[in-house]
Length: 267
Image 1 (spheres, rainbow, N blue to C red):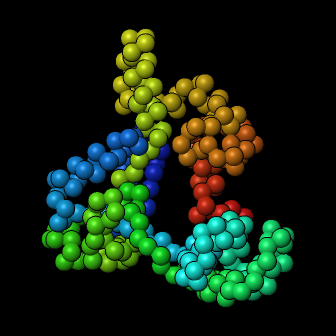
Image 2 (cartoon, rainbow, N blue to C red):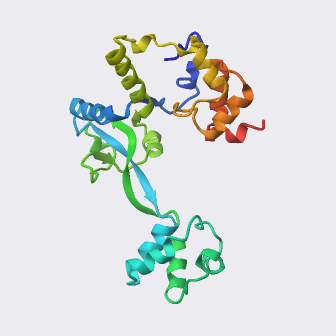
Image 3 (cartoon, rainbow, N blue to C red):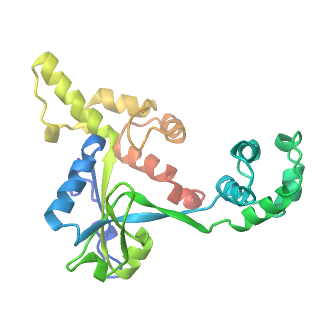
């Protein structure tokens, strides 16, 4: 864990008088224990006072054209012959003309009704297709959840609200992210393996890699493959260029590489 006092972290990031929305509550658990945690929440607060958040899945190129082609009575083999070659062509301004010139489709005869299918499919861009279950977002309500927001049962059997996370937050619902993290499971299993094979018990809460010379050297040389949050190629390359294994520099590197920070990098 990271000591917020030692590293002078800003608590105002989460709670500040200027913030009108409730703070995020994110808690990570080993990936293979997350369902147990979710079941505990549903049992403790009841299905009438708790539910998971949904994701609104929208149509993209392949799915939209696939569905429209089925309406026209084409067979599955005829449809996939085209859709498997579409790639990322969804945002073309004149889809049929540009698809007709695409080398991946040059050996296909896009005869009728394909021009109409493709045109109609591209018009479906961004339209809702179905709802899925958010990876870990849960809402808890003082009264029955259905009194605040529409609720339905997902195919996997859990209750979900029909709003996405931003809509739930805008409405004022308290959202908690109970997330599964594989790295936590790896650390847990490694500690158990050390105890089983060497008879050495290492309390998890006493781990302090910040003081470990070999850990800092791995960070300095960018050897962080398999380390949650800092294993991407961009992060590893940046760590190698920075040539520092200090925690503060690791924070800077991981913050710069985050997608949300990309637009600020040049400032």
